[in-house]
Length: 337
Image 1 (cartoon, rainbow, N blue to C red):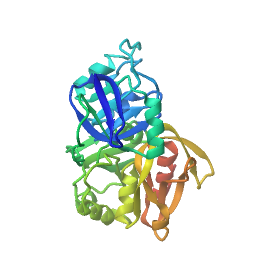
Image 2 (image 1 turned 180 degrees about the horizontal axis):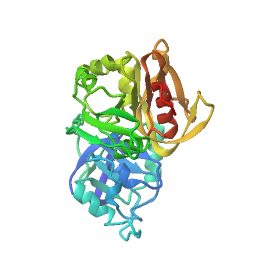
Image 3 (image 1 turned 90 degrees about the vertical axis):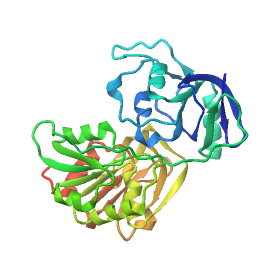
């Protein structure tokens, strides 16, 4: 027996899964029907308790090649855990994966009720524990994992070379750029702007990462140094980081956007795109109106999902960049596609 305890005093009884340890973090929900391995390795989830709204999780097992990064959430919450996966790609069960990655989880809780609570009251702190605690532990920042400089060659003809500023990159982003003919050199988040200039790239890509990370003012200053001097594409966490570097306002959302079917309208081509998102921060486009314009708008709540800064050669989006986003950025760079 285990408990999921919310900071509003509610407690839900369930069954332990994964690593046998008590954990605490902000409880959020994601609406994805598939992609739980990707969720469990998404840097944006580091330090969070992630709850799946889909009732049965684990039915197709685990394929390790779907892992996005070495990051992991603090905890995992599901309604029903499937112990008998069936898929030709599966190399093991979800519970075994959770144990291997050290992720504590709970199953057998009413996730439908929990989702309704979060939609009403907003994302909140919670704990997975064996006994209901007298108090919650202090919330801690998530450290950005150090990385070594690495080169990812273009698939096919090399058409662009970019420096990827790694704040917590997903493998799928690197692969998407490689598929477009980009040679990508990943560098650690604490790399200085002058070091990036010395590499003479065609562009810089600012990756996503943990929203609970402690990003210093020094890092924001390095981002500001690059803006206007070299084309910059920012994704995920990179979107609010660029806004902050330019003096814009970034707010915490009520429940965030977490799922694979978020509708986003692009003002540049008048089309609506279905996007994959995982964020709880919102950029106030009005605080940046003298520097850029909102070009991607969430159709569910009107929130800013992307900014274009023409005079700075910068495009930032708070969702996983799709083909249209990368193509638009190449146009901004003066590319031939």
